[in-house]
Length: 269
Image 1 (spheres, rainbow, N blue to C red):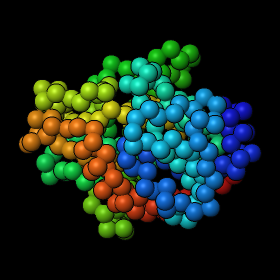
Image 2 (image 1 turned 30 degrees about the horizontal axis):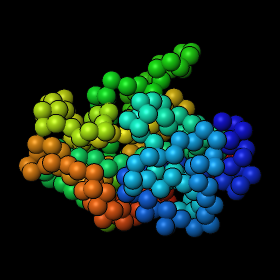
Image 3 (image 1 turned 30 degrees about the vertical axis):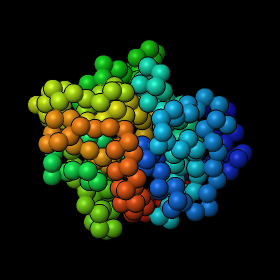
Image 4 (image 1 turned 90 degrees about the vertical axis):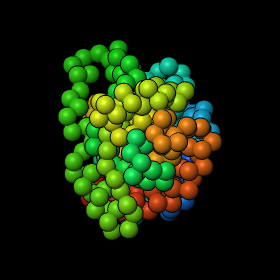
């Protein structure tokens, strides 16, 4: 990863960065808010997996957002694309190597709470891994035994809520359950997740959070609710619906992200 980081520095994507941001399905609108931007397609970065799902742009950007330098991964690869739950290991390792001080993950999710319906934003307080995968399987050494208490950093979460208040965006809070995908969850699976305490269901974010903890990056995460989960009200999710609602909510998410980043400490080399 050091060689890849050097390559990116040579192309103007050097840090340090107040934050690295990973955008979810249809949520690339915050890229339009970047200034002083340098961009590289994923396909030109050794080892970086190109997204194979529509709604993910597939470019790495370095620029200024909210008065802070940020690194934005426009789109992600998912475990369900290859069966590799560690597919985001290289991107997050690169973020760390380039000097990112924190990680903001975003995703599109289904909600188990009708009051947090389509278009709502939800800050993650914890997660439940229902996928049967872990991105650290096969990792050598004691570093793989990553503690997961406080996986979603409490200080960063408070900063998210302060940012939401400052920019006038409503922000809920909840627990996210990771299903492997790519098929959507059944109503029975959603009921199970609810019994276990989940407020949201989705197909990403958890492996990135585990990997970020492995790399020593504090994590904040925000879900954009694109649908009610299967069996909740009239919830019967489809990918086209996910993309359409995400696109409509992306502006609010971009405003929140910009306000959030503006409250982070200025990164020092």
